[in-house]
Length: 156
Image 1 (cartoon, rainbow, N blue to C red):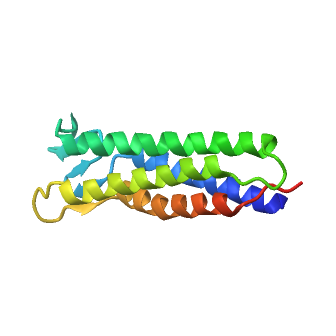
Image 2: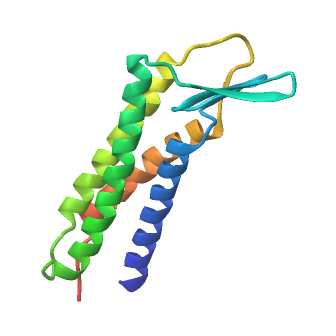
């Protein structure tokens, strides 16, 4: 049982790290001499590197908010898991932890979908970057983790 709890905790920490990196990293989309993330658009020209704030469009603000919410709910889920691990009665299930983790999964999925649909194509050669891929990798891991918490029972 200790190995299962350690494995679930390790999976949860990996998911939290993936969400933090995908929220803060600077490559949601790349192409040529341009990289774009949730916060800045950076250009490389004439040997210089200039960054401009992200646009004030509603869709990018929605993606920013959803990614921050996914990080927060994943963190709250970790705190709830640790609290329930020590305070939950024998045989109890980790429902609060599961709810928070599944909500984090839904938020990251919605953010990635909005970014996919609304991201502007500024010419040929624009591709999605590694932070975007990390967000999509975190989504199923987060969902699986939430489902594991629903099934998991506390044993002595």
